[in-house]
Image (cartoon, rainbow, N blue to C red; front, side, top):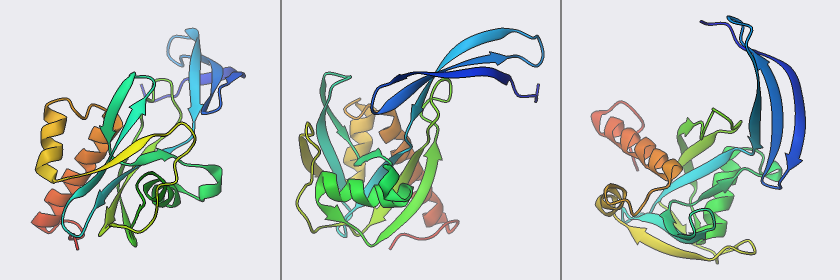
Length: 191
């Protein structure tokens, strides 16, 4: 079953600012079955695991309308067309949401947020030796508290469900995986 389904018709059916909705009619190459699928065309996203020289991590606490509550997350957001790519977006989001900057960014990994109906990817970067150098530059409607936490504290927050955002947990996984390999000598060592 290595043949791709064929998209025989596609149409944009809605533009909702942060995503557009597309309808694709696809055909199975094996059975001829046809079906309409709703697809969300989203910008790529970035996550930033930002580590200070003291070994603490920069977190944000913000209101999430979908969950109707405050959530604790790592900094991140959408890749804007003006960014020029995911790393530039990661640098911008870290600075805007937290006032922290870092000279060195390292791509840790990527995930597909939900390939069943979304078109985007989420890139996780490590920002090392982050320092607070700027004021927050929040978008209208953003209200963010900046927090610092140790790695064990973050692990505990994930285990207790205090951090439940799937993409944040994926980003934290990429960091923990990278750190393990760095300690074993398999990847670039932390500075």
